[in-house]
Image (tube, rainbow, N blue to C red; front, side, top):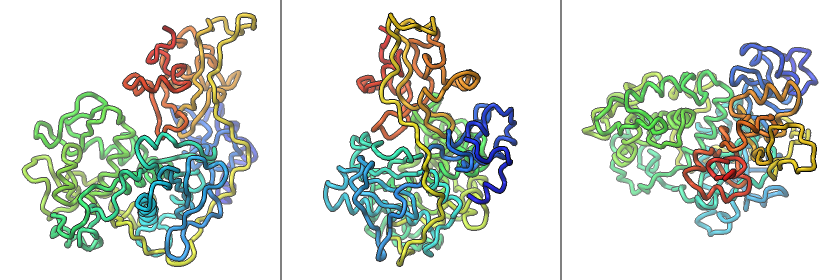
Length: 518
């Protein structure tokens, strides 16, 4: 991190991220000029928690992460090398790294059978192909890769959807995790032009194999999509103007325009774009997929369309109720036929086409693939190329809160008279910018006042914020992480699935949804 240290203001060196970034009255430009700060909710915050500011953050870093499985060889003698998990990796039956980025395969998946283990290796091979897309044995975007390594990015590979809930038993240095399952991995899929019998580098060969005539597997392989999402998260943190998961980024603006008047599921106004009852090329009907989710999905759709990953009659038909730019280039036959809204990506969204097609020359774009993976990585035949990484985090990491903060007993002095005995903070870490924070992060004094004023924090931590009068029986407005659940959870999700309420701590978090005060 020599470059970061050389450019930080002298007053920042040696300070914690919180001291360097917060309560400094920075504007956005000043905030992002400090390498360990992030701008969110109109305020400047630490992107590295209480760690030293020289630990970085890149103006929007992953937060809370660190290099994982350091010195573990992921590629030996021209193939993926799997390892027995070290201590602290209880969710995993086997682990490896892809150019320094960790993969954890669940115990159930690794024990299942040889087919499951073969699929796990396929997943790792696809990851290699996405990082080293030109297969020259060198990562295409070292800056992007380094960000994933330094911020503890992890690919989680469970056997089944049910098994995915067994995540989370891994070191605190894991900063960002993404799931891709054995159950949705399909080696030999027709998604890949190479598997269809075409040349993945020659677009002129793609039209001849839209019928899947080469005997490839017609089932869709979700592996490329899920790994692409993980990589897009890093891109959004490194280059927020381009890839941030909001309609304010360049990608987000272009994606929003593709919707036309077809609406979104989360706004309850979705119209099937293939029905010809609206004008638009992208409209997602999933009510749980908010603006950020829509942008991440849209970036994937555009990228995979550009590299021919959807250009079959089956692929374009399967995607039509959500995405109608699966045909990449002008001059190609547009599928699905008879759908008025179907267009090439090049014509339907010139802005998206430009964003995902400049993969080799422009900073902020080199992480994107130009070739659709087929799960047969051949670019790394000898010793692994070691990505430059920072030293592992040595500062103590705050342990997650494991039990609800109880209300005071009758004989305890109650410093907050508003607390009537029902008030409880959530025991779960909430989403704060790109960090995961427990309620004791709120702190005291001016810092408490400032942090509790942040959107949704009072509802998640009413006792810590002294706001029990207003929130003692309310749902948390924050996204939060439940141990062993491999995604962010909201109280809206809990209200739709009351089985969540049986998990310890959820009732204290979603008090209204779970009838905590009844």
